[in-house]
Length: 251
Image (cartoon, rainbow, N blue to C red; front, top):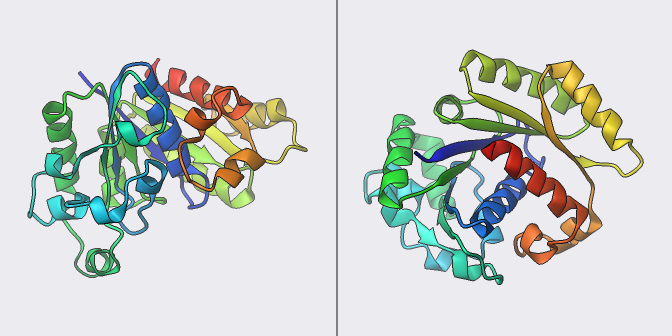
């Protein structure tokens, strides 16, 4: 049975896609076959981190949702694009970056139920050990469906008052959906903060375990999504934090 992990945040700009990509790469480096699906259809971007050029996307998640291909036809083996040999496999299912197709989603919508059918088909067709779901920020029907079928949910937040409030809503919803394994991650924390205090405060506020508190990193910002940080900087403290999160999610 594959482990399904959703990575979510109430607001954009939390580093959700970067975190998803890094956890995916670290799990694949352990030998797992990992699928990662970009369900942030309105503002896709995780394909950039895995070096998948839009010109090479014959199919995307959008095509599956509109019935023009099977979901496995939109899966790309990006393992060799990472620049670092790993023992596992990464299959990426991107959303379309074409303006016309994004506009079509906004205008016409799609059946969110197809996503869940697609998740199960992907697991079987690609013989996956793990399926990572990069969700759309906020709470909508497809996000709720993704969370509901997940074995683990990682909610990412920043130490920002707007994030504190929105995260509270997301935690409450996740508990109502009976997510088996719920974790928080505090990201982009200023170096002037006490990381331990931040983690303890967040755990107390939400009565939920914090997998890691990750400080702001100039090296991560400088990479500017041109690759997966954990593979480029394997000995960096941020990479150690990502490993901790990956272990907690699989545990």
